[in-house]
Image (cartoon, rainbow, N blue to C red):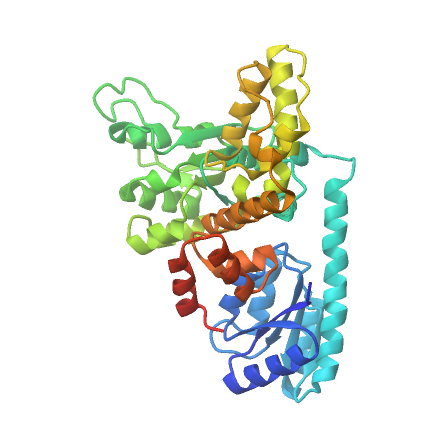
Length: 448
């Protein structure tokens, strides 16, 4: 794959000329006008380097360096600096920047630094992959198996966030394993020996929701005959899981925000604050930023929860993992039911990766249960006898369709994730009859 560079420069003329020169030097360049755009493109699996001007309006290069290293501390960042800013750039090197280059620079010198940075990044990612597929499976990999890059990245971020005491937000579709991720965050943290209290925000009765969470004193309301700890207080020293956080009423969101800020609660019927030592993990199946834009979720609460974010991928984004994951679920089901494990036909396994899985891991687990109990037909699908070219085409179509669905119809992350050009993606969408409106929308939003 062509080496990829994110070039961040607010000066349009400088950005355009540098991008063209780097493309002539053999790089794939994303020319960006702000640090925010770079943050949207550089995740833990980013296989490239970031080149950023150190002085920019809004988010400057130093801030961008810090934000990128919150995502992945080993993303190589090269800072472009003026002569007077060299001491600042040297300080940035001590803070984790890969290198800096002084204006005016010769493009060949910048290209040499970028190549070294990309080679280093390639070694980092390869080492992660080797650790992920090595025989030494730790508890996190046993809970969240998979050799695809999205799962390697998820486990890497989970270990980094889990070792801290930061609040976390877990986002993913129904059945993808968000609860498993949340429990793993608790179990690898220093709070593992303390309570893990799960609260389904969608199931709490509205009339009792404050009492359930904050507790109450005797006489706080009719029927409150004695004091009662709330779930937050019951979790002291441990972790509170806020499932379906998007369903929490706006009024309660304001009170939760106060708890997150002050780490105290006040029971109903009392004026005395109670110190609260807990970690909060919120779960959502929808993008909270969309709810913020729609006015149904508080923006300040979103940013409070948005400290450590983990995106759990759908099965459509990790199809290569499906056969091995199915075999693991079969072993677990056989042990649970005390039934001898059935042999799984190879043709049946290969067909699983090409299927749609709207219920994600939960649906696959149900299939494994039925398979173990003899309720699922394991005869090969007649389609498996089709020509290899037809089967490859069907798999490619389902992979692209799944990636489009996983990214909410946004095509830019699709062709970047799949490692193909924008033009190639459009051609394949036309070839397989995928929605042409997506192509038209993307062409308007994402000009060449």
